[in-house]
Each structure stands twice: as structure tokens, then as C-alpha cells.
Image (cartoon, rainbow, N blue to C red):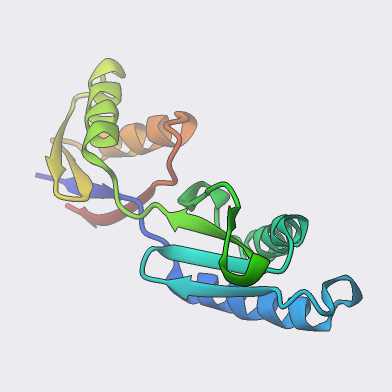
Length: 161
């Protein structure tokens, strides 16, 4: 029975490249001189630090610009509010949303059922597996999912006959 998986995976190589480019631009731009602006990857997400809150927001703009240029969707990222850091500095955590959460997966399964395409959807950990009898039905399901705005970035993997 033909099937495929719907996943939401962050292209980490491209994110790392965008981080490196943003850090390089922050170190070279005149308006960031003396602000100690930095962008780094942490286990919680991406951390942006600077001496002032407005410089943190400007560094976020630089990072988002680099991500867009590298064709990384901004839907993966959830910027939090800037916080006060040590010694009067400011910091902002940008949470990374990878994988499909349970409630979004249930919403996705309900959406597939509502399309009336003859396919079945099942939740598997951080992904949703969609299977059907015909390849054409699966391709129709992919088209419907691409048109839908579910608030997360989706990729389609493991297409099997």
C-alpha cells in the first residue's frame, strides 16, 4: 500500500550557515560596534545577546534576513520577548519548533479526513503517515496539505509504492 510521511524538520546545516553569516555581519556593521551583539545556538534554541534591547531586536532582524536568504522558513522559529541579562545586557531566546506536536498532528489528521480524499492518516511520534490505495490519491493529499495553512512548515518524505 503506497504511503508517505509528513514531517517538520529544520534544515540545521542551513541554520548554522545563517548563524555564521549573521554573526559575521554583527561583528562588522558600524551600528553594532560596542554592543557585543552575538547570535549562538543553545540546547533551548537560538540565543541573541547585546547591550541594549533595541540592538537585540536589530540582531534578530539580521538573523531572520540571513535565514530567508538561505531559504529557511521563519515558521520554525518563535522569538520570545527580550529579557534583562547580567550586567545590564539584554538577551532574547528564539525557540525552534521541530517535529509535529500532538495537537498539530491531530489537526493535520482531521484536515486530511475533511478533504474527502481516499487516504488514511496516522500519527507516528513526531510525524504523520498517510497511506492510500492509489498514488494519485496520495499526490492529491500532498497538494491539499500544501494549500492548507496549518501554521507549521511541512515536508513530505519516504514516498513508497
